[in-house]
Amino acid sequence: MSKVVTEKINLHPRNLHRSRYNFEQLTASCPELKPFVFMNEQDAITLGETIDFSNPLAVKTLNKALLKTNYGIQNWDIPNDYLCPPIPGRADYIHNIADLLAESNNGIIPTGTTVEGLDIGVGANCIYPILGNAIYDWSFVGTDIDEKALSNCSAIIEANPKLIDAISLQQQIESRFIFKNIITPEDRFAFTISNPPFHKSAEEASKGNLRKISNLENKKATKTQLNFGGQNTELWCDGGELAFITQMIYESARYPMQCLWFTTLVSKQSHLKSLHKTLSKVNAAQIHTIEMAQGQKTSRLLAWSFLSKKQQEDWKFEEPKFKVY
Image 1 (cartoon, rainbow, N blue to C red):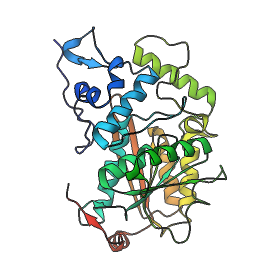
Image 2 (cartoon, one colour; image 1 turned 30 degrees about the vertical axis):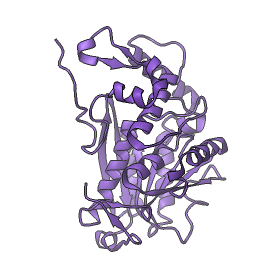
Image 3 (cartoon, helix red, strand yellow; image 1 turned 45 degrees about the vertical axis):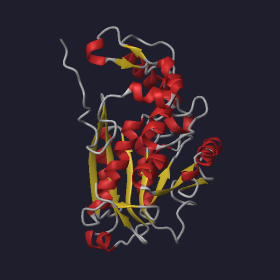
Image 4 (cartoon, rainbow, N blue to C red; image 1 turned 120 degrees about the vertical axis):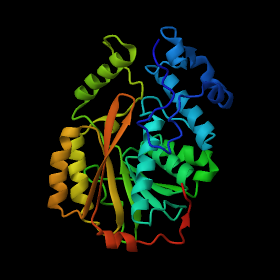
């Protein structure tokens, strides 16, 4: 008999999703999830209730249920074919940022809307601002080049009144830039956050998705079906992840005193060597690489700051509220 996995030990200790999904609780909170839930017939003792993670509608409905049950988000939806984020992994990113902020704050995580983050590529789902606000009461500026994505974020915010004063949105009008046009001389961000386009081309993105579906269904997939969705700008850009993050690093050097920590996800470990070289070129004062994992997927959080440890300790959050975790 296989051992029952009851805890996802790779997730952050504060992550609410370390235990298996409680589908009884989720379907009670969000009845529209119920038709997608079934008992795994291959190994019911080990896996129990689950959903078909290769079904885009099932994945989106699970997200609705998780956001409603765990984070108080009553109304959330995304247009067809837009990226539907796996919430446990996104929550891990938020918790790791909280740990970074605590490092320069006597080990205490700063909470409250005076702690402001900048989400680069907020997408249509608005997930990082939603989680950051729900967990730590942070405020956010969310940016994107996609007007339709921002319009959907706006609809989510308007449908959940507690988000209205916590999240603002701004369109990046020049797609070749990341921070330019967004960070103004008056801005002071505690952190930036980014899940950059991974692939170099639409063809590469399609092939990668076929591999993912094949793994989920345990058989060879021949038709592209984006279970987690994704528009072109969310999935690929010229040069892929490495080019995007390299550009981000060079641009961040123009705003050294306006952000405590610049951060991004890095999907491919082989990119780290080049990215660390670039960070050295722009004289980053501090660099952290934090391993993150969800299921079989491993990623990294790359964080850098142009502030010395003393300068970080002197960083003041306006009227901070503190909560011990």
